[in-house]
Image 1 (cartoon, rainbow, N blue to C red):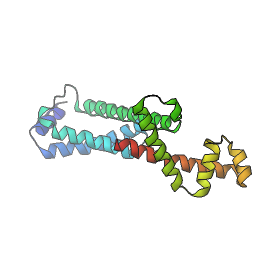
Image 2 (cartoon, one colour):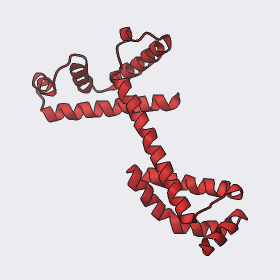
Image 3 (cartoon, rainbow, N blue to C red):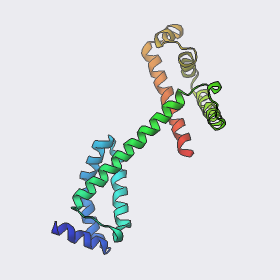
Length: 183
């Protein structure tokens, strides 16, 4: 604890060597901890890097009333959970867009405009798909056909139909995610 207090005091005073020592000591374990929560090592690294960036940037105002280790782990945990919650909200929004009601069911003018924008995005994305993929998607989503029925009609295996649908949905999700981030 005394050593941590000394390191913290040095960091507050702007000692870069003390900060680097703290970084080297905790970076990897914090990344693994964050990855255990987020499930993604690249996201975990970003979370921990941001944590250390903020720690250095705001070092003069820093007030830690517990051990530095506890503080770093708690901050990493909180940021990781916040990331997961944010991803969950984005995923629900993406899914709600893909299963959005038809334009006749939307009564709010703002929602109507947003619905039309998204419909244009989805249509333009579908038009860019290979012909077979677009046809499979439309047969399934617009005509309500089952994968087995589509496979039979197009002389494909059910696995091929599933793979094409997966690729189409992945493409749509990516485009919708880009749209959401641009807003």
